[in-house]
Length: 120
Image (cartoon, rainbow, N blue to C red; front, side, top):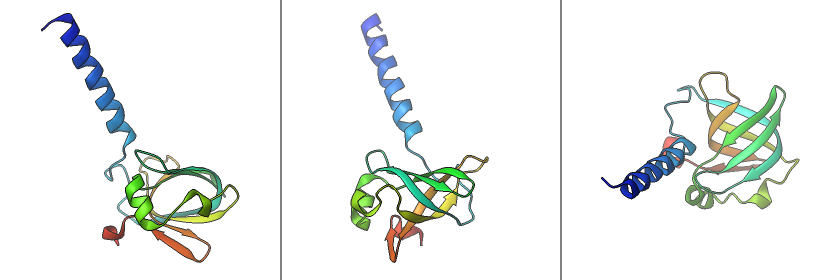
């Protein structure tokens, strides 16, 4: 293998590993349903998944959402979750004490955005 090929392969593997670690599966999360309620501090709905920072009574939580296509199917937009909006994230909390929840349903006022309808 040439030095250039080795460098190209190394770069590809590094990028793949970074993308894989950024996309969260379900194995790091509790099997039990949980929820986090609080106020939106910030929100982004980009790839590989959306993320809302929510200030709850016990601190700031990372509210992990679905990938962009699923967010769009649910009808959730940034306009629905501006800073200061009260939300409840229902899903599965991360194992190990990290303040993170993988959200199946996001409740904003009287509206529920079903991000993972197959998991209901």
